[in-house]
Length: 385
Image (cartoon, rainbow, N blue to C red; front, side):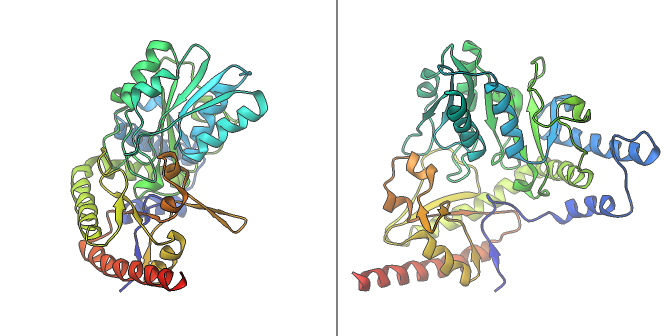
C-alpha cells in the first residue's frame, strides 16, 4: 500500500486545481503587482481577485484583508502592535494552549517589558470556559487571544462569547482561525473578534500564503514589515503572486465544497474512532466537546507516542505526536498538559488528522496496523519490566 498521510493539521497536500492556477504565475506570466505597466497590472488583478476569494471565505470585505506569508507572521503582527509601549502592570490574556506564534510572542514581551501573560486553562474536554476567560480581563489588559480551533485536539472554542465580553471592556481580541478555516464556517461578523488569522496550507492551498483580517473602523496594527506601500501600507514586501493566487483558489474551493468535505472528513474520523474503541486502553481526548470533523487525539496507554509514531511511519502511515523534541529530551504536548494530563498520559497520545484526499479504505488499513503496533509496544514494555 502506498504511503498514507494522516497529518493534515501540520499541512495538507496541494489541491491539483490550486496547483494548476498557480502554474501560469510560475512561468509564462510575470509581473510585480506594484508595477504600473501591463504585466504588473495583470499581476495586481490576479492578487485582488484572490483577495476577494479570501474575503468571501470569511464573509468579510476585501478591504479588511491583509495578505501575509504565514499565520505566524499575522499573529506576531497583532501581538507586537498591541503590546508596543506596554509596561509592567499591563497584561495579555490567552488560552493556555494557544499556538506558539502567539504564546512565544507574548512571553517575549513579558521578558522585555514586564507584561503579565495570563494563561486560561481549558477544561478536561479541551474547551476554554468563556466566563473564566472573561473574568481575567480588565482595564490593564492590552490584548486577548483565543484560537477558534485547537490545533492538537480539534476542539472548537467559544470565541463569540469571549468576544462579547471583550467588547464590553474595550479589549481587542485576536482569533487564530488557522485550524478552522476551510473546515468549519468562519464568519468574522459572527465571531466578533477584532483580528482573525488564517493560512492557506491548512486546507489544500500553498505554503507561504496567509491572511490577517482586521475589523473595519479600527486603527489597524502598525506594520510589522516596513519599507514598501504594499497592502495599503499595512504590510511591506513584494507580493508572492503564485502563492496568493493559489490561496484564492483554495479559499473558493473550501467555501463551495465545504458541506461535501465536512461529510467526507467526518466519515473518516468517525470510522477511525469507532475502530479505536476496539483497542484496549485507548482514550479519545476532547470527544465530549464540539470538534472539527477531521481531527482525533488519542492516548494509547502503555505506549510512548514517539515510538508508536515511528513504527507507524515505517509501516506506511504519517501521524503526529504533538510533542516537541529538544536536546534529545522528549517533552509532552503543551496542549495536553494544559488539560491537566500527567506526563505519562500526554506522552502516550497521538494526533491523527484527515484530509480530503484520504479514503475509508486507508482508515481501515491504518486501524489494522495501529492495533498491531500498539499491542507490540505494550508486549515489549511488559517484557522490559
